[in-house]
Amino acid sequence: MWGRDGSRNMVSEEKGLPASFDPADGRNILWAAPLGGKTFSTPVVAGGRVFVGTSNENPRDPRRIGDRGVMLCLDEKDGSLHWQLVVPKITTSVYWDWPKAGQCSPATVEGDRVYTVSNRGEVMCLDIHGLSNGNDGPYLDEARHAVPDGEAVVELGPLDADIIWSYDLIGEQGVRQHDSSHASILIDGPYLYVNTSIGVDDSHKQLDAPEAPSLVVIDKRTGRLAAREREGIGARIFHCTWSSPAQGVVNGQNLVFFGGGDGILYAFQALEHSSEATSAEAVDLRKIWSYDGDPGAPKENISQYLRNREESPSNIKGMPVFHEGRVFYALGGDFWWGKRKAWLHCVDAAKNALLWSYPLNRHCMSTPAIHEGLVYITDCAGTIHGLDAGTGKGYWTAETRGSIWSSPLVADGKVYVTSQRGEVVVLATGKTLRELGRIELGGSISASPVAANGVLYIATHKTLYAVKSNESGE
Image 1 (cartoon, one colour):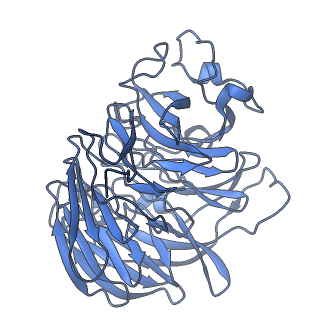
Image 2 (cartoon, rainbow, N blue to C red; image 1 turned 45 degrees about the horizontal axis):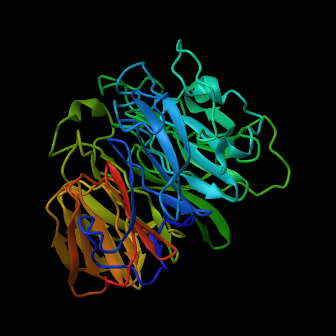
């Protein structure tokens, strides 16, 4: 899954990764695969395959054209297509499923099962082999699912996805998603913890579904709802629920950490693992603690603070990261509608107490990465920060040419950062700022870099690059 495990810490043990590469002359490029016109989903590598959500402006199947959400399953060796999940858009309004945004949710993979959330708010379990090994049930209506209502069904082929089960968050839980679904599923034993992407209505001033859950738990074996939160988060959302959950064990207690759309960090008791399939009766998640990282922010009549860059509620966009008994997370004003202030907080997960706070520039969408006593995080001003994980003391900052929507990857003694201007910046890890490389890819980058099996993956909006040191490279 995103971050490799439940801690959500984007630190890789991979070695031999290059500090520079060049698509123009092929230096250190293993392969490049075309994507859609927009790619917000970070690639996930598992089982010899690469999974990435994208849009359909570059259709892989000429029979499936038009605006769609797409998840591609590519071969790890050469980027060739194994299969694709193609999902029609929600047509209620653009604020349910933003035009040409594609599928924003990444994959979570376990064995031969791929879990994701479609652009239509469907939590899905897919067969890693697609339809190449037949249509496995219980879900068998993939042909109808892949086309918009009212259009003729297109015959399925071996390059289509095989849906094992699907749970509709909108239909079953009354979720009013905003802009799109953007959830990285956390897997813990038999359960999937899912951000529902609930948000405000088209006017951005009201909540259509304040009672709907922000966090749900799905039984991965059956696709049934196992649990949901009932903390009233949905009634306090300023814009949307952007953050996905993390997991960690604190004093023997298995906790799930969740950044709510109300700007509050929550710790829930994880469900006990069971060998039995859950009953149809879902339970309520038990809150262990909550922490308000911006207690002075407005809490009532919050819609009046829209477009106020000085005073507004805070929200949490990146994921919380659990590391050595602490939770690291960024919060601050909404990028589109709120104040410019943002901070990186470090909270004691046992005592529910702030250990330190570090100011960031303007807004922040980043998930921090913690490695060898340092924290690396980016912000929307295009700044990369390196600071002490124990004290929050800043050691250095580095600038990119564009705003940063992605999160840093730490691997092989390097920090990899991508920007909206198509820039890849490579820095050395450590307390001293040292730049190792700067690559211009010429296309906007919203996804975070990842590494697996000696290969670095960088997804621009239109191309996925597999980067590997070759004999002529470093």
